[in-house]
Amino acid sequence: AQKITQTQPGMFVQEKEAVTLDCTYDTSDQSYGLFWYKQPSSGEMIFLIYQGSYDEQNATEGRYSLNFQKARKSANLVISASQLGDSAMYFCAMRALETSYDKVIFGPGTSLSVIP
Amino acid sequence: NAGVTQTPKFQVLKTGQSMTLQCAQDMNHEYMSWYRQDPGMGLRLIHYSVGAGITDQGEVPNGYNVSRSTTEDFPLRLLSAAPSQTSVYFCASSYFGGLSYEQYFGPGTRLTVT
Image (tube, rainbow over all chains, first blue to last red; front, side):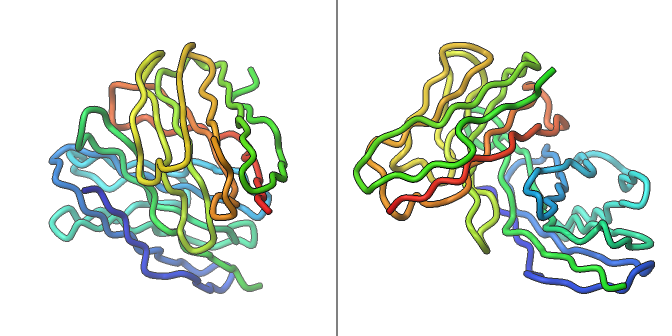
């Protein structure tokens, strides 16, 4: 069965520093997609970045990059040059086809606080 | 283009009452899903649909029913509300047929069952 683990319930980072948010996943599928979403205190869900299981390069989107290590089944999010607006909950998610149709499941999330 | 809309935004129910949470999208997405968000547990998948007339169970389907009669709408029914169903509910939609499609989320419905 699909499973996402995020072992850091809360993280602190100094403004302008880089931070890595951990995500490990489990699936029996060879083909899957990995996503990161941000949820600010206002509550909306914002898509940040995507990595496909067959992508050879790590995904990057502006200050976000995804450190994908397929053999270790990890997909860590790296935020460079943290800003105060990065304070939010961050969720790792996976889309895989394990039964009849592909479904998307989420991890428990990491709360990031950026300190001035 | 409204994206994904959810109604109501807030709801208080008494134990045993029934209600329907509404979700609609105007992006012609085949794939729609319902999640509940509880502190420390992230978003847990309740039910999802890959098109009109096709639904499947997620991780926590008990106590919830869904149906999908149109591409645009995917209502979630609570048949007999319980305090354990107090949560924030999110509806999401995406294109279907590829694993790279990100989901678009509604603003959420905060439900309290007393």
